[in-house]
Image (cartoon, rainbow, N blue to C red; front, side, top):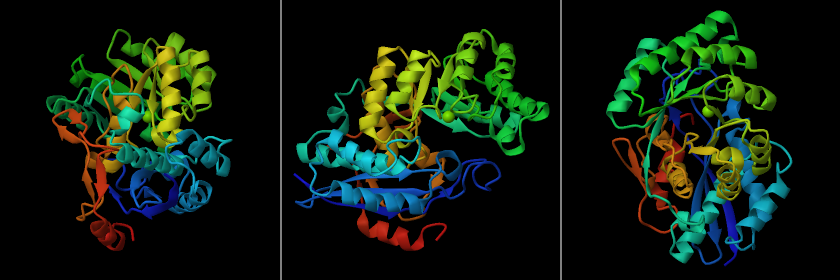
Length: 389
Ligand SMILES: [Mg+2]
């Protein structure tokens, strides 16, 4: 089997997640979103997804579409089942030597696994080495702006059966700058979440790099000493590895790294420095399944937990997240409802199949490849009538 063509199709979502809709903070109301399609010479195809954000990952839709064209040139007539070679060729063609710019590669890599899974009659998790599970506890993201709204949202999602809550505690300091008042407003939301959430539910307090100072982070975290369901996620800038080591040693709560995790080689540095207890695995920052599995192997060897995360995705990427989570030994709640809570693609439901969500549980379909497909006629309508045209 040989690759005949790599194509990108721009998608046109709008954000529905609180704190995203007005572009008030750093989060985009119309994030870049591109469907990737890899077609084999016999006409069989696989699909994947590149989802990005301008501030967060430094990519636009035009950049991602241009990379689809570059990867088309790099991958024609290559065996799609040679994931290692395909990834090597894509890295050599663009961005292998720098962090970022990997959403397009992750979307093509996802499509390669879908294509090969369909051809071999195997689900993607079987290509990743096998599934520890095919049903998943779930996590959701909460960007609420007041302590009262945050507490209410926590109670609601706990009632619905969610086992992980990501409490955003960086939006204000990122938008308005770090000072005492802005920091206290972030902590007030976290206080409300902690108060409202039972101990069997993980609380991941995510600062998205906004807390800046390792020492101030440690003093802020001391008020939460003894709370064994709380972790702090990425309080400091992505390159401040020593700072995160300091927070982990002195903050009294586990440290999760997210923006610092952009390659397997970088993961090895984080593990060597003992900079974190857990990572957030984003396939679009790492470059897809192939790079993610190398990263997971390092984490498992170093007893570092892995939480798999939407970016946010359509049903395609969220189903891919569950295949990824299936192949990870220790289970943390999966963030795979970006297609429900973050974005709206309009009336034309162009994705078919995929995970089913019931309460706080997601279940993978029993199908080859990713287990999702595209209604191409509806996609054509979406391309004409989607948001932000
Ligand atoms: Mg994060």
